Image 1: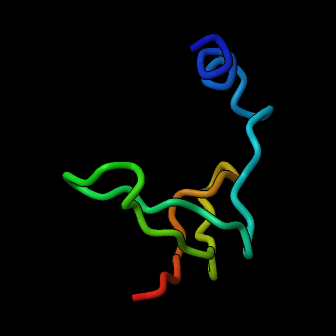
Image 2: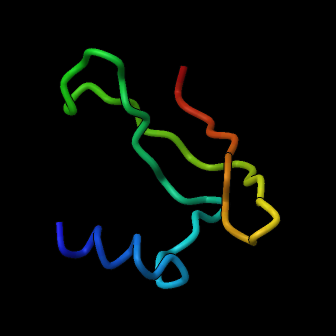
Length: 60
């Protein structure tokens, strides 16, 4: 909780997502063990320089 609160108060200290990063894709009603893994192929930046969206390739 404390780390999350610090990141919200200081967003510049958060790491932005990069192409090639491996991420977990959250499922709607599944257990965390069943979430899919994906690789970021493209990032869409906002005007403020932070990642706002990304294209993720999964195995399916």
